[in-house]
Image (cartoon, rainbow, N blue to C red; front, side, top):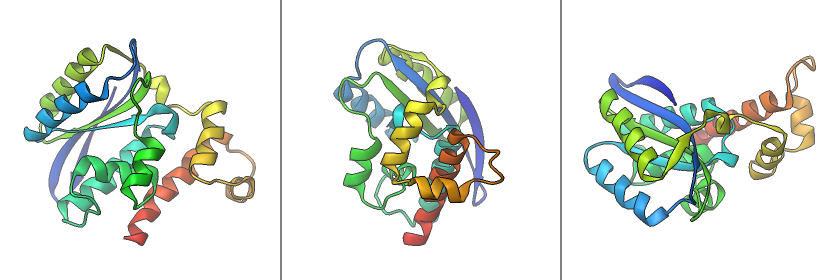
Length: 193
């Protein structure tokens, strides 16, 4: 579990990003009901398939951009949690974002992003959801391995030519390049709004 404090337009938000390995498959109905209850208390929870995460920076930048849109009332969607999914997927289309990166019923490895105004509420929500989902914290799920690099390349339409053109002096690893290119897609979403 990684914790961050973000200042957006003078407002303070607490963010937790964590990889979660589920002992049983994800029960979406049960979790979505709990997420709705948390949202009523000003705690926003987004779930992402861990295979679709290009490192913790990917989710942190997506959170920051979504919060900026939220605070400035410039969101594409009506909900902060969906806005975060849009940024994380690098697309303006809600249906496409959901298909790309939202976890499916029975999923066993997810990333959890929780945002709120009070740090202790955010941490409590993380622990509560971990218990509810019968999950174990595993931040290694946020890292990019060879299998995930291949999946992310396809998911974000990153070509071999783009990888080669983005390499600086040949010193960056494949995972660093993929992360950099996914971050650029997150940042570019603002230009398409």
